[in-house]
Amino acid sequence: MSANIRPSGVFDTTYAQDISINRTRFDKWLSNGLFLLLLLVPLLTIEGPFAAGILPQSWIGVLNRIAIFVIAVQGLNILIGYTGQISLGHAAFMAVGAYCSAVLARELGMSFWLALPISALFTGVVGLIFGLPSLRVKGFYLAMATLAAQFIIPWLLRYPLEGLTGGSRPLSVPEPTLFGLSFAHENAMFYIIIPLAVLLSLAARNIVRTRVGRAFISVRDNDLAAELLGINVFSYKLQAFFLSALYAGVAGCLLAFESNSLSLDKFLLDRSIEMLAMLVIGGAGFPLGPLFGVSFVNLLTQNIIPSVIPQLKQVLPGMLPFINPINIDAALGPTLFGLALMFFLIIAPRGLAHRWEILKIAWKLRPYSH
Image (cartoon, rainbow, N blue to C red; front, side, top):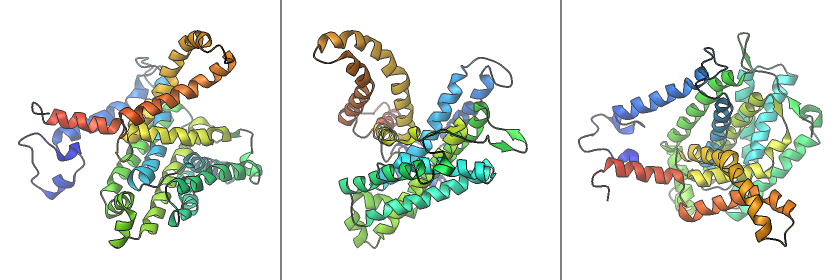
């Protein structure tokens, strides 16, 4: 939206400028500068090469996790935001990528750099299989079909494949190396995860600008009209499921090697619902939606809710004497998260990214933003 609106006097003179994502020199300098500043973060921590201690070391782990889930939610955005196909099994696809890469590294001695693309492609194929019901069903019924993946895949990993995956027991993951250098430390993994997150986010944004992306959007807006226009609706739905699962596979692989340990508890249904909430809050169908959604949900669950819960524990038992205080304590976290999701559905149904686009347009049209 805002990319098509520029200040007075700024116009395109070449076709390359017209199709560019960053359409002004300022935009290019700003995006490249922010990326370089982000890469400097590990150098400014106490465990960095200069032991500067300017930034807390805890920031690295937080940024790594945010970037991993940005990749996963970016795949969900391709499926839901651009193609309009609901999925409740995204965490299960992350589990496929995570365990596939871990098994390849443990059992076959494969390097991280080879296990990553293989596990991503394998996860994409699994996504194709569970995308087959989209030929006949959509909406609520497709949600139920994808929910099957969330129960079938963890069951397969827990019982029939227990010999490879360890079942319910934690599975250790070998550390990634390159030319004898270890990337086990979170500062080193930062330089793998962040560039991959940026690259895959740019790829997702460019997919929408291609013929395939336009077909995705037409299927989302009106699949019957798209079919009448000659678009193979089922083919593009399967492509969306493949790309979505591929992104989830990459995120699962990075999560496995970043934590050096795997457990099925990381990929349960609540994680799929959480990623769906990230997309709703961030803004489905917007390139920056996953980044805003993942960052806000991480801030909400790690900082805001834990700071509010102690005060509510003192007040609520007196207000709700008919409820056991133990039950109140257990329900506070999920309840506050659900209320935040309801708030965004009512106040900002199109997400934070839509609000950001409106803000940028108002700034570009100043002083006539009204």
